[in-house]
Length: 374
Image (cartoon, rainbow, N blue to C red; front, side, top):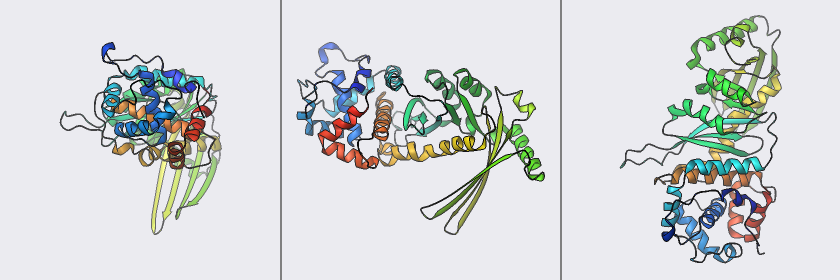
C-alpha cells in the first residue's frame, strides 16, 4: 500500500531548524524525524535500533520519502538530535496537540516528574535527566514536558511548563511538592482548575486540615460529602474513602479561588501485608465528592498510564543517550509515540502488541499513523 505524501502529523515538525551546515547534509531533517518517530512507534528504542529498523523498512519508506542516500546511520541520528533546539521541538509538539482541537473541559491533566535513571554521565559530571510531564489522563495524551536537572527543581519548572500549555477548562492535579500559591495562581490565570495534594511541606495548612476533619469526624461527618471505592485485582484489595467539604474562610482568603478541601483514607491489603494512609487536598472546584475523587484517582494513575508504560514498554529507564539534547528529544519522541499508540483505535491490542504488529506489518503502521488525522 503506497503512501503519496507524508502523514499529517509530520507536517508539524517542518518548522524545526536544521542545525547542520548545508555542505554536510546528506539526509533531509524531515526524513530523519519521520524515521525516528516510526521507529519509536515500532519498538526501536535506541538510535542503533532506529537505523536497523529503517534499513529493514527502506522500500516502504521510499514510497513517501526520497531517501537519496539511504537510511541515516545511528551516529548521524544521534548527532542531529543532540543538536536540535528543544524549545522548537516542544513548540512542534504543542502545535500537534493544538491541531487535535481537544476539549479539555473537566479533563484531568496530571503534572508529575519522572527521572530517566540511566541518563547520567559520570565522566562529565552530568546528573540524570528529570522531566516534568503534563499528561491528560482520560485522553491518553502527553500535552507537554520540561526538563530539569534534579527533582528538587520541579518547583520552579512547573510554573514555566504551565505558561506554555493550553489548558483552559482542564483540572490540573499536582502532588504536595507543588502545593504553592504561585502555582495555584498560574493555573487559574490559564483558565483551569486545580487539585493540589497537601502534606508536611505545608505544615500549617496540613495541621489545619487534619484538625478540620477530626472535628468533622467528632460530628459524624455532618455537612461532609463522602464517597467510597473498592478495587480487587492482582491479589490486592484496595479501599478508598473520600471526604470533601467547603473550604474554610481562612484558607479561601489565602489561596486563589479555593472552594473545597478533601481527605482521602486509603486501605490496602496484599496477601498478609496491610497498609493505611491518610492524605489531604485543596481545590478550586466546588465540593462535589465524586468529581474530585475522580481527579485525585486520575493523578495517582499517571504512574501506570505514563511512567510505567515508558519504562516497561519503551525501556526509558534503560536509555543511555547522553549527548547534547539527544536524550531530551528522544524522551519527547517516546511520549509522542506513546500518545499515538494509546489514542489509536485501529487495533485492539496492548501497547506492546501494537508496537510489534506495527513493526512487522507496513499496513498496520500506516493505519496507526494515518488514524491521527491532525
